[in-house]
Length: 145
Image (tube, rainbow, N blue to C red; front, side):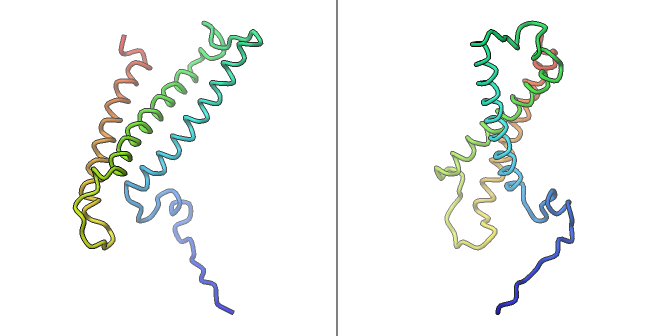
């Protein structure tokens, strides 16, 4: 019977959180998945709250349940998730269509032509998301008035 190889988790929780040799692309992938799930959760909650109107419950009226400060912060988080998810989605579409792949060479890992084109595109996307978050954050904090 073949012996099963076991690998110790020497890094503990940090090995899961830090990712070891993961690059920025892996973190962008994880954040894209998490923001997608968060937007889906928000959409489902929005449908439930909106459907409560049929029973005569208006939760978003002035001074109501959804006008507490924690929900204002929640709106900002939804905005942040949408901004990141949309911009990263545009980046992924450009990559899938071949605009950010680079010149073809012998495929030796790490694929340097892809990294030389995709990583700057990822950084540009993150800068645009930060600018969008700063502009939107000032509006949510009441500084844009």
